[in-house]
Amino acid sequence: MNEQPSRRIIHVDMDAFYASVEQRDNPDLCNQPVIVAKRSRRAVVTAASYEARKYGIHSAMPAMRAAALCPHAVFVPPDFVRYKAVSNQLQAILSRFTSVIQPLSLDEAYLDVSAVITPGDTANALARRIRSTIAIETGLAASAGIGPNKFVAKIASDWRKPNGQYVVPPARVNRFLAPLPVGKIPGVGPAMQAKLADMGVATISDLRTIERNSLVKRFGQWGARLYKLARGYDDRPVESRGAPAQISAEDTLAKDLYLQDIAPLISRLSEKVWQRYCTQNPGLARTVTLKLKTTNFKIVTRAYTPTAPPHSADEITAIACGLRQRIDYPDHTRYRLVGIGISGFIEADAQPHQQCLFDDTS
Image 1 (cartoon, rainbow, N blue to C red):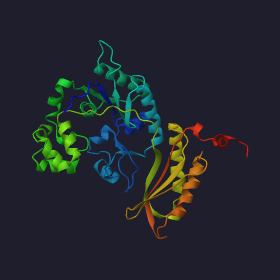
Image 2 (cartoon, rainbow, N blue to C red; image 1 turned 60 degrees about the vertical axis):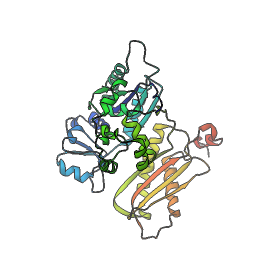
Image 3 (tube, rainbow, N blue to C red; image 1 turned 90 degrees about the horizontal axis):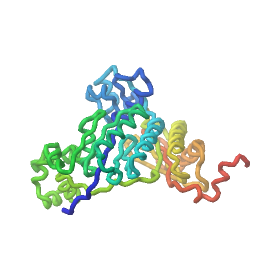
Image 4 (spheres, helix red, strand yellow; image 1 turned 120 degrees about the horizontal axis):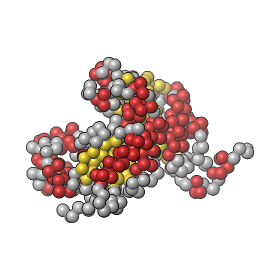
């Protein structure tokens, strides 16, 4: 195994982010079991406050199951436009400490602080300053993990949640990982845990007893990666990301609808997409995509790239509604999900005729 690069990585993870934003913005929700989800039979939990988690509620759980576990829980529909605005504020804060940032989602990110640690300073102390700044400027709590690589830092960030941090120096990596269940390894879900259990593996220490060739033979390249991770080896760099490939919004319907009846939903989703687009400002959007899922879970998408980029929610709505004509399913087909997306972003200078889109003359 090649020598591992020497890095100091911080994984910053907001605590119950969506639910915490709701509690911050509505004091009546403080100390209440808050569930971010629509209260409907088809909805799933997007996030749960720590008060709600005491009842066994977690993200991706059916909303009605969560309601049964905690009948007095407060359900709040998700507001991703607001969450994105807070996320942008968080990213601006993180960028003050290092330019090497890799966001994983709206509420977590890796930071490589190897090059910004000054003599007499530590990554652990820097993580405390980051968390303090976040708390002061946003009113939200963040946890952090500090380690020599992304894998260790991410596990460590969960160690003292909420509102805590944990550091794993290089010399302690193997001792830190050894007793952990293999389910702590990102990508090792229930199915993979069952396969490893068949090999007598329950903990990372157990995983180290399996020869590399045996893991590769059973799991291919994923087996080779498991061999490295079990030993705390992760050479992936923190990669700063550019503009998103797509900005989208979708909704699972409370009642399946026919194609001709989804125009109002297309309009609402287009408005959400446009608000997110204006917040992120990734460049001019070229392509509009309509996504549908039928009652029997078949997914169909249609896309169109107009001559001039759309410059309003109404234009996105018009294009997406027009794409319905390209759906060749029978008229009696009903749909359980509708999604709208925009993609193909380009710089404004790359669109020679774009200026006329913003002129008032016609």
